[in-house]
Image (cartoon, rainbow over all chains, first blue to last red):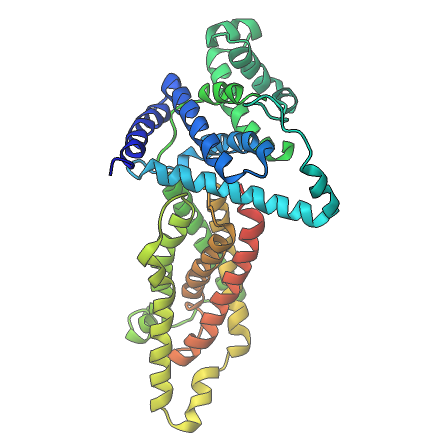
Length: 187
Length: 213
């Protein structure tokens, strides 16, 4: 029983943070995503021991999916089951994509890949946020650039861009939605 | 991209999330799909002239009992398949049990019939077109259901597509029965079920391609 307790405690804690995030609490939501990211990293690392380079990509894929699909979480149901189903789907999707790639490529590539170095900084991926953002319209790109990457507040961004504050908020919201759609093309 | 960057970006978007998205999408999809299917049956075949009277008979309700039961339980199954982590469990029973019961009933009808009457009970007069007509009537409903599912997150796309196709086939069969002159259980047990199965197969193909996220 004592082995299970930490899992239950985590479920309670994450559940509360997630629900607060669904109700609009950005700090709680950020905390939730950070905790979840760490848990996902451990989960995927154990299952991708042959593919350490894919772990962080998959963590980001899954965080993006959790965010983009959060309307499919039904309040009152266990969060663990929902998150696990999303994470496993992303893992299976990765296996499926790689199986197709390997069927197309010369098998020699796989032997050589054993010697490929895996020394990129932990928590970083080849996916480039700048290039993703370039594909968004200005009304979405600017609010995201200023509020998120330069750390300005909504009011400051509104003053800087000449947009209204609600337009800035809508721009961030629509921009993140659009990013979620562009996400897969950039893998 | 650093994962921290992504998290900061996503946290910026921590707005209130609408609840009941799945319920609303399924309600819209079924309403539009059934309307389109009704319009198609009316335009292509015409509704039965004796429909008001027919709908008061037990024969009619016995005929649509199987597709109605599959539709009711299939809706729950497909809805759950669209939500990660939701378990379908006993609801799977509703997917095949109505068909099994219909087959037993049809077998009993055939058993009790005169040998010469058996083939007409199975073939009726419209067996050549029935499978295609049921599937065609199911098509708008299936497309609408796939649209509803694309707004959700099915973790088993092919299976979800097949279940949605089966559900669409059942609803389509109910709609088509407003035209169909056949009333014998063996006919429904063969041709309606084949039409629903074809719809399920199309749904599986469509799910494989369009339900990934």
